[in-house]
Length: 199
Image (cartoon, rainbow, N blue to C red; front, side, top):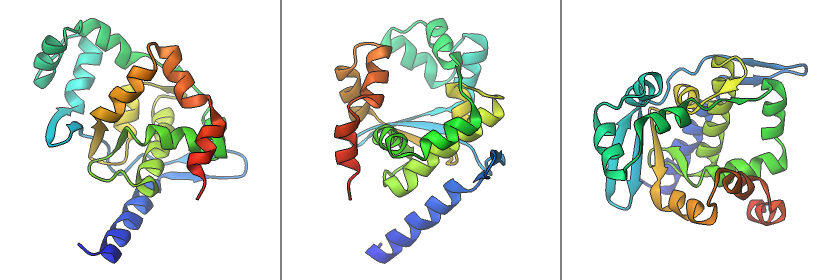
């Protein structure tokens, strides 16, 4: 695939991931995404394993794993009920304010950091991954009536397969030993982030 074809493909993907999020002067009108994530692909180099979003939703609802989740939780020695609680943990965010904040420079820096870890399968380019995250958050808040969970985000994420870059995720986890540390990693040091955002 030549450079112009890749550029055209990325622009089309960016266009489609941005569809469904329309801001007005007084608020936000959000249409349901035309497609949602069906699988989460865990990727590390040549290694790739996909987990169905339906299986994650089942775990969140019942506290019991099925499919590949059974092996993943067993190998990682994770309690299914603890993982279910994590999947159901809800963030209550005002829709319009969140939409506006994500469009600010600092908001863009934070989303770009997240976009190094999660993005549509094999398309890590920021012009695609950043709008996809924005759409997932905004549409997820719409689905959840102002409350966002991991499952609602996946149900609103506008790509059939969301890739999780395991090395990038592990690098963040090493820097952040706790949830509060993770929040700090993405939200603090804005000057460093702004340097990264410079053209």
